Amino acid sequence: MTRAPHAEHGLQDLCTAGTRLYERALDQGHIRAPDAAEAPCLVALGLLHPAPADPGRLEPVAPAVALDRLLRGPRVRIAGEWRRQELLAELFAPLMRLAPGSGTVPASTPALRLLSGTRRINQAIAEAMAQAREEILCIQPHAGMVGERGTAAESVAYERDKSFLDRGGRVRTLYQNTLFHVQTVYTYAESLKGDNVARGLDEVPDRLIVVDRSVAFLPADDDGSTALEVRHPALVGYFATAFARLWHLATPMFPKAEHRPSVNGVTPRQQAIAALLVEGHTDAVIAARLGMNIRTARVHIAKLAATLGSESRAQLGYLIGESGILKDREGRP
Image 1 (cartoon, rainbow, N blue to C red):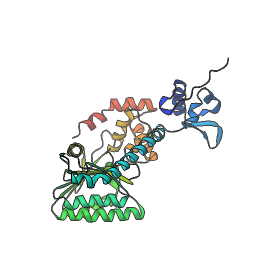
Image 2 (cartoon, helix red, strand yellow):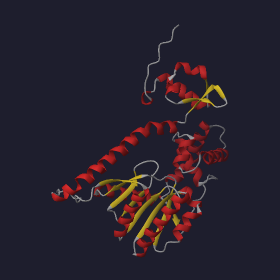
Image 3 (cartoon, rainbow, N blue to C red):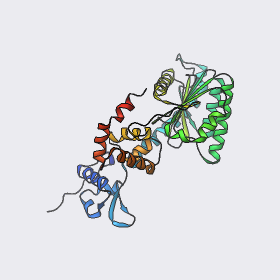
């Protein structure tokens, strides 16, 4: 019997046969190359690739990697549109000053502005902080960049943070809990004098800086080379409110750290992993969301399984629910 030709389609329109085969490859870790004949789209779309040591075997690409590829194009297009808007804003700024509008934001200060390059981003943040007098709210998912670029960025950040605190301002920083054991975080905080407090969460969003609740800065791409400066009152107020709610849920980290206790032999880190496991996330997604490498995540998952007496992934989810460790976690303020 002749097999019907496989219709071409994109990754967002994955066919039923392709979906079933991809799920099987993820479950088993690989499939035989001949099995892919029923859904050749998987190889064409990059969801399956030959194993380096055995070309006759096809291995699946992690869903998180596939999703990143799918989103990369829109991110590039969005960044391009922001650059175009920035150029147009600069072009029309002199004309708008001659005939200013009636909006709440002055014509010379756009509500949204795309900043390109590390130097330009740091300059804009420094200018905003130089005028600030009250409060800086900051979310820091990572300890900082490494190498010469990281050293230069830290030096710039230290001078503006110190100057702001010396003027009597207060700084509130949210870190990811994986940074509780990173000494450089504490060394940096201890070097600053003033009202500087930090807390930690298992999961935090991407980097955010809110200055005096009047301007906010957030990344506009994945590598940190562009940032968005936001001066629209409604958006800045939204960011500040979201920060306040995350701050309420966070655990004190500096100046006095508060370490959460284990529950029935399950550590706080393993409780965070357990919450993501019952949601059905893969090891790669869990590692990315909790700021750790996949090997460390798998070590914690293995320890969690051993503590709860689980012999399989499916059983582990059931035992997590029966153990009550997530109820204790949800009840924590």
